[in-house]
Length: 489
Ligand SMILES: Nc1ncnc2c1ncn2[C@@H]1O[C@H](COP(=O)(O)OP(=O)(O)O)[C@@H](O)[C@H]1O
Ligand SMILES: [Mg+2]
Image (tube, rainbow, N blue to C red; front, top):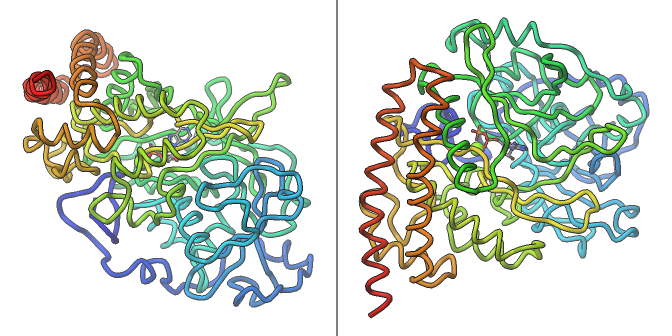
């Protein structure tokens, strides 16, 4: 995957930039024609425009989108010139004293400016080949961001459902269509011949990230998508193998499993086989079941959203989140258990170094809100895999340890700077590193056995991944020892 703008690939940075370059605006304002939403339905309501910029759809007849937090109206989204949007809280939301949808969009302000609003909502869009496949298939007018959310915003990451004003009155009741057979057909094809899943299934959902994946609802081993026009919640995310990056599914499963086994809170995952192909099933941590079995949405925002950073700046080198900014965010955001969250964030960062996960950027950490709209905490970790196992992916860490982002350059001085950035003492960082190494060495064999039972043919891949882990541990152990000795002097 490329850095900066352009076509992202498989959710990670590639060494070689491919495809589009140019400003963000250029990418998102690609001129196309006419939406795929049944506009007649919405236009029939005859909503007058409210004068908040030129209307992107319906040539001025449609004025705004409604933004709901699960079933509750939270506000409105207006299109602005230059592919921007403006978000405004609804009076009903503010008068009840409910929480903000983002740390970057506080409720003290009813209406937020285009820069902040756009940064938050642009982060809901899918990225990479799936985005471009949708762009190829869909005809959008001037404001691609607004039009995209109009069409695909009903089921996003977190609790928000976005749709044309009035859609709530017209949507079908909670309803799903069974797509199991279509998934089988897609999985059976090779990656090259398979359209990205979202395109293949005509799904109208949006989840960030660039890997080929699709949010689904599942029950009794069948898979469902929300019925057209319905915002019935999905409950899992399915990730599919890539031909370019072998054993991606097994890699992510193994790394999540290893992280879980050393006590990190990670997203629950399993591998299932569809038509002889392994796919990864991730349980959505932003969904919950009430006592009567109803599925509700829990809100989440990623660190880019919380920090008012656009998705094109998700890497530190693009002036995106780094360890210091993330630490400040965790400590200053009224999280229910901020010190525990910070401890876990630090452990996850050391774990990522050891497994060679160079793609832990600002969109791969999130804050999750509880259902009472009062508390929030660091979300379980997700998108954890060894990107260093693929030689043609960027081998610079997404966030610098100290001021280095190449594995072999990160020495004791860098770890001391890292400790400073994440506000712990050098004694503590040395201890934490040693403990994580001990835990990983205790658990890694078991996790390896498990993944090789799932896919025996991945043995060479995992042999090399295991050697990389051992190399990192060998280097890190020495550095931790040096830090410890210096700290005691
Ligand atoms: N288990 C999960 N539950 C809820 N949301 C998730 C889960 N895993 C990922 N997400 C959300 O989906 C987005 C994309 O997932 P991710 O695993 O990062 O995909 P990619 O590998 O394509 O970057 C994340 O940024 C996060 O907002
Ligand atoms: Mg990701």
